[in-house]
Length: 337
Image (cartoon, rainbow, N blue to C red; front, side, top):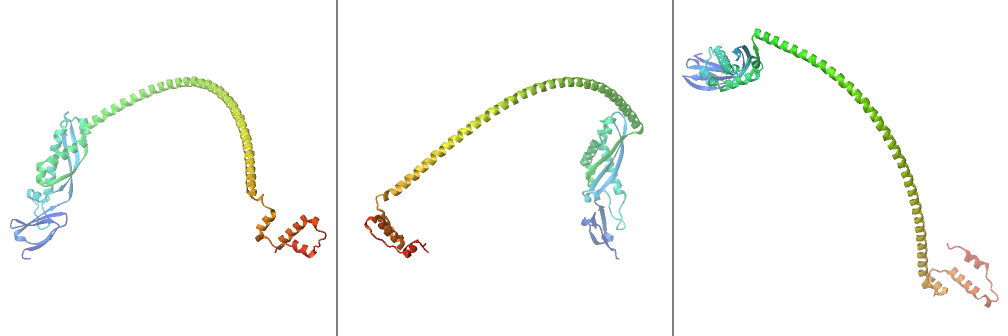
């Protein structure tokens, strides 16, 4: 109404709004109102794009080859691209469809130009096997091209799918290859037969050498067995001698041990006797009566009565008559409670 419209773009579209010949706003995924009589809008789709290419070149041996592949690129500078190609919207949602056709054609032309010089230096067979190198030349040529730089696009990948000769040359190469393979097969059969004969001769020689070696080994085994038997007998004799020496050594050790034990027991008995003698020697000069008197604390009435009986026994020649009652003896014989 009254020329005022609303427009909305997705996030993969770069928008430039011109008002009275000047840029009013610019960016991705914009939505805005505008006055249509003095406004023009350029919308450039972003994201990666793939284009297929196929072109023919001539090798240095004057043979035609077809190079087929794919170029993947992105729009790096949409503003620069809008200055080269017209992306102005028609009826608010459409732009000229041939813009990307122009971009694709220019990329194809630059790719062929970058490849032409390299292919002309190769022969047919080398060129067919050089797909990777051709892709590298195309990539280098597109990245260094000023025409591509002015478009504001950036090449991100080059894939050369195939390099093929003309149908007639392909058939000739197949025939040549087939003959070469057949020749190699015949040569392989000849070499295999010679190899089999040579192997048979070597096997026979090996068998003869094996028989000779077996006989020599048997002779060596007999000699080894004789030597081993002699060594075993010598070892048994040495073992018997060593056993006898060990028995003699054990008996000598037993004899020495017995002598040492006897000497030690004698020394121990002498030491005990000496200790007992030294312990009792101070008491030899004492009278037994004095010793009993010294131990008076440990004596009771029965001990005193026993001493009295000892005195009586020593002086029996002086006693004429002695009466001891049974009650006294019974009291003395009773155990201490």
